[in-house]
Length: 210
Image (cartoon, rainbow, N blue to C red; front, top):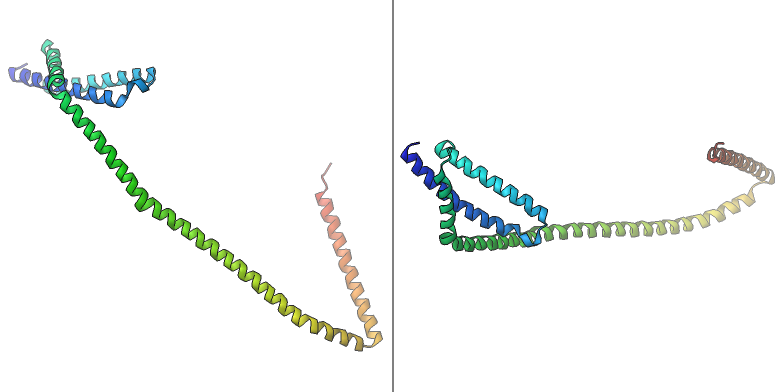
């Protein structure tokens, strides 16, 4: 390993130590340990340390093909100590500002979406439903009114027609009346037989088979 490679490795590990400190504080900030169950904390910690180990080893592989030296661990410790003494307060302040800014922006977007998109669409849907219901009620009222008008017209036409037919019936000869009555009775009897036959068939069909 050349001297320049060792120097780059030393600076990289110092940087990784500082980065580890920042990532650890970020992890602690979002984990919220007191409110988490112990097994969740355990698996999160295990996953965090594994990810950090992979990142550090990958960086070491890039700068010196993954060769381990004792000073590498010292550089990591120095980088972490430098972060704790020089940059931790500034980073935590920036982290809190970033979190608060993100929360404020997300709340603003949520309120804007609710006011500009959700409420207008909901109001439009409600308006359409009200219009459809109103149209349906109007059509139903119109149909009822037309039915009453039609029934009234039929009554007006049927009553005089009934009287005319009655007068006409009285004027018919008795022999013709008897023929008409016989035809009517015969037709009514046939309809009665057909209805009884259909009723029997329906009853047989409905009767459960044993």
